[in-house]
Length: 491
Ligand SMILES: [Zn+2]
Image (cartoon, rainbow, N blue to C red):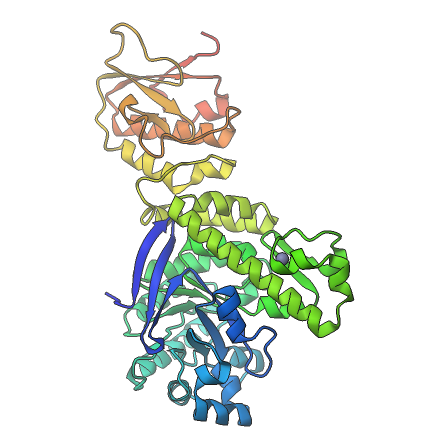
């Protein structure tokens, strides 16, 4: 059991947690955003990140510090917290990214971990091999073996109470990612970045990203804090959190600002295309788009970076509140509408509904059916599993209409899309209290029919009649043959 990470609330795969960072003598509430600080140039100072934006943790690159003489000397002499002037926790990356970009770096895992410890990093990182997507299996396996050797080496380096990360690699091979995660989870290391997903995000391959993260999550214990490495766009945070990621880092806020790009939870806009600012942060209330465009370059960059950070932190607060309220999947569903590739990501997430169901709370406040994807949510899956355990009388009416009068049936149960049948006594229990649109859709009817089928297949001797309101033939085909069908709209 990892003592430095505790869960406070969960919803679907998402969680609010508390990461204890002993060296910084602080705790960080997750999901957390780690703004990326380039030690050679900061658009927004670390002090301002803490004071104005409430950043509890940031990330900087120890390899850049190590390879820049004057910065290295100051870091060693003053320590990282002093150098950056940041009161919270500081994570350091190792240069693995530079390794993936330039093919080689000049430090070993021992050297860089010892250096990170020496300059006062709170969470250090070994030099892993970030294997890109779609490489041959041979390469993915060989590089993973090297990464695993480095993690085992990292366990032996004396790093005091600095937490150390154990990156999970394995390219786009889910079984390798899962095995890598299981291996990392078995080490004494502390934080688990899912690595090398940036190329997937750059190509909008959110579906593949979800598969990769889901695989890694299968190999990690629930007490493992997971870092989605390089994921900094607020548009995809809700999806990332719902998968079970706890830490995100953002260089995007600054990089995008440099190119006059304006972040929103629905995607990126170019400042030149904006006639209005769809935001109420201090920047967007102080300036019009025209006024922003007229600012000197460095000032405009700073203001855009500040806006980008405001929307980013705002989205994290919204996500945390959604977890508390049990409405995280409703939020993911909304965000999925921002871009067709985000919708692919959400649909892929629902392929892993059984995995999400394991952590999803049994009871929440509300279930809003807001798209046909809702029919595939973990709550529907759980209800169908529960149907196998309910005791069924000899003759049973399942109906969308009024309960049967007289003694024709032993019992009559309700049928509600997308869940299907349930005893009337359960009507007030979650998720059967769901708000579902009057104008239902085929996915909800099909899921309800699957529920009927599940019940009938588990109880083959029961005499079942289904009263439905005009279900189409393609949906009724899912109901087993022995069930007597009554169309209530025609009765
Ligand atoms: Zn704004």
